[in-house]
Image (cartoon, rainbow, N blue to C red; front, side):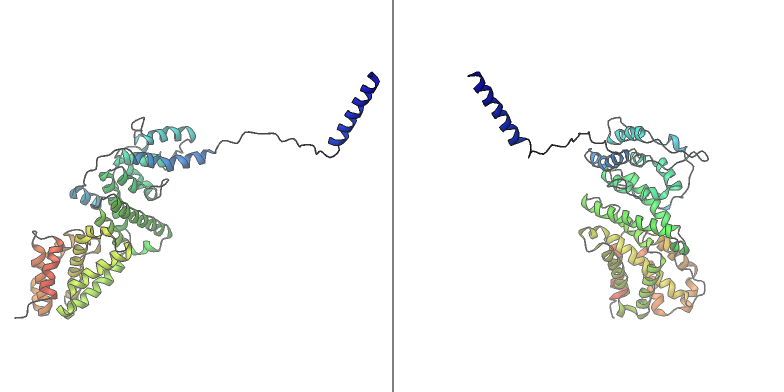
Length: 382
């Protein structure tokens, strides 16, 4: 009985072994290792991209920019003396997103310092932090020593857009003044410099984004000033060409509707740059201001044909409230006798009309354009 059982067991084991072993492949060894941590540069990029979104959620109280502050920013000198860069800006509240990003960046990346001047290009978070804290002194240092850094994107935003999002109108005015002064100090030859042209392309991109974002956020106070800087970026070429067209209309008189032509030229420029958008309602005063300036510059250019050396108001005051008119009126007063004796009756009438209508301070720019159309484009025939 034991022998039979042993033999049966042996056959069972033998059958099982021959059925499973020969055709069954051996599984290869596959060690499992943990994934690498992300690189420091990746973490930095993520931080730069997410910080503005976090700041956007913080409640802020908007305040309208004052006209005097805007005028000071647009005409202030480019260089001033400020404290050393190393003590430029505090880190702000420890719980703010920018401060968290600041502490994180300090651990991840050491600052590069220059032994000669004590200045190094700032980290992106420092620029955003200066915007949040309205640290204009530090931003002025960047303007004077590393101006392109005010134009480049930081993550998904730029210093100008960030100032709009976190409702810092004084910083917005300051940056606009920096851009305006940079453009106004360019010479004709500068437009052939590749580095300057790159800065101008970045500057235009900032202004386009600011106009679009201002429209979205219903912040339209500075949109006309943005457009004014865009006009100046085009250089004297556009202004000179448009002045020549308006001067041609003035020579022919009301038949060519010179006031309407000047207004149409500015409106066409705005439409070409931005399309026919809803925010153009905020540009009506700018369009009227620019149209009137074109008329005065065109009239002065005609006078210059008969009075040698008669000055034409410079383009750097174009569409900046009364800047062109002040120069136009002063030169007209000094040369009144020469104009009366050498100019045509039509031109004398046009010059007098411009001076009379624009001297009044009770009308808006749009109102002045309306009066000029009645007197220069559609005069009453007696």
